[in-house]
Image (tube, rainbow, N blue to C red; front, top):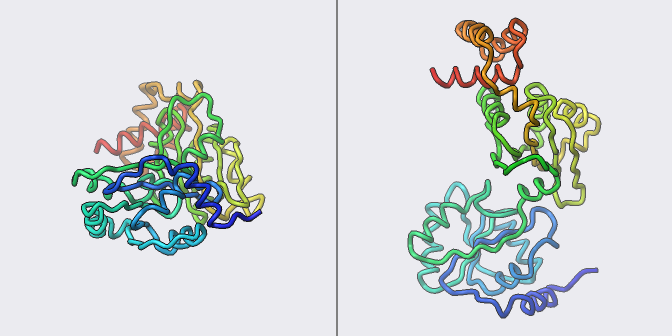
Length: 304
């Protein structure tokens, strides 16, 4: 059943109309990550009240407003112009207007623009009012069921390629708790292959197209992820959120100090060979855990 915009706006007004929406405030607005039905009634009512909407992409936000039967002035404010566009928003706030900020999807300032605008707003003494809602990070975490984790860390997108990407992933694997990553469809196969090599036993939840029609959530050992992805071409399409589950106690013990001989062998090999090759040979010669050798090699290289 389709609800008309007028009925939706009336329902939003009935639910949130008695709440306070002060003027001269910036409203940081979470928007759906794929399913328009996830828009809260409070957010809808706020959009009916604001004098303007600053947004990451005027086309995306324009379609959202059209869906709600609303027409508001739009201010383009994205990662490339956030600082230069912020004064337009601040001028409206100084004039006592209500202004919302929305990124393309999800919560602003979480791997999206918005943080610099909020900082500028606070610096000018204006109120910032967050309207919570959809977040792909939190959505993925609650579907992962990582009961052993004590907290989580969000990393967004890793470097696109090369040794920088490998080193960043190894650093992530060494951290405690759940680790949340984003990845693009054209790089997902390469990332899963790297994970399978570096931490094959680590539990991994792959979330594809969260909240959308073809949403897919699958948990498996990282070592099995490349084969799972390759089994269906549809699995390589869409937007990905990955949750690396907290390392189990056995894996955590691999982070204990390396035996002196393994440390010596690794140091000698790193003088002459690339990191990956040095670690592979050190693993074969010393019998020490490969992940522990990777972590130690990364530390030694960064110390140079």
